[in-house]
Image (cartoon, rainbow, N blue to C red; front, side, top):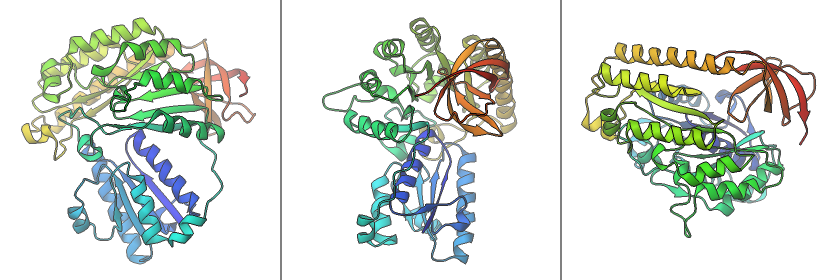
Length: 428
């Protein structure tokens, strides 16, 4: 039998799609590249913005047409498109065989075994273990307790639930054995990892334990909520050589009134002070951020405050998006989406243009330097990988360098990537 998984959205979705793919492969499914070839199609969805939801609905229409011609095909849908009550979804999309909530992988496995395959077959068939990607995702905490007013995630993924350190370490060891050299720890807010465990733990303690694993050469983590960034975490980053010098600290807005309406839990001054502490503790830290423009009621002056924050803080990367009302969120219930689309687009383009200039200046300063690149794969005849500061680097070399740490001399730079030539290779 053949399976196809379509994924849109965050890294957590990609991690969960990887786990779903592994489950399907362990049950003997062959992974195919198009839905038209598949006996089972899994859609892993996102509704953080309207554009994402539109793509999900478009894909649902597409696979509905395929199923009408191939009635034996089974369709399963997961991700944040799926709420706790699926009655309306079952009514609107009767061709879908199974809806299951984000992260509920056991639910999918049980359905697959009970309604798609013979259970005895499920118990007996195991495919050979697949090689891991060089950089592998490991979810460590599911859900979110913050309820930012614009965000649907807590209503879809629920409250925060941390995985045990033992479970995380075991998964990481398995990934390393099958080829991973970098582990990326995932959560809606990794900064609160372990607070709900008994005994309580935290992300810094987990980083120390992961750093002891043989064969692991890099650790990344995201995303961090600014109000929960602890001194102990900064100390761990500064003291552990294999923890990458990169954090994602979503600002979302540079104006106090907008931040309060967003329910972010910090002020502009709080955020500026945090960035100063981060850069003092880890001087070579790269910081990325997220920003929303056109939040309900955002005035031109409030937008300018966000613009100036981006200009002053000089982030290494900015992921900017126009506000999109999400039914079920507090912002959608309380506020009118009153910033015209053309104003949102103008503000978005202004942020993008500003950040492109900042990134160009930062990256141009790296020309002539040599940096370590963990090689993840090949595109258009060039090897690619990332530095410890999460910068994408491309270079040419005739050797098989996947999974190797290559010292690359940077020769050219754009706002989005670096190009260079290999100086030396460290084999793991």
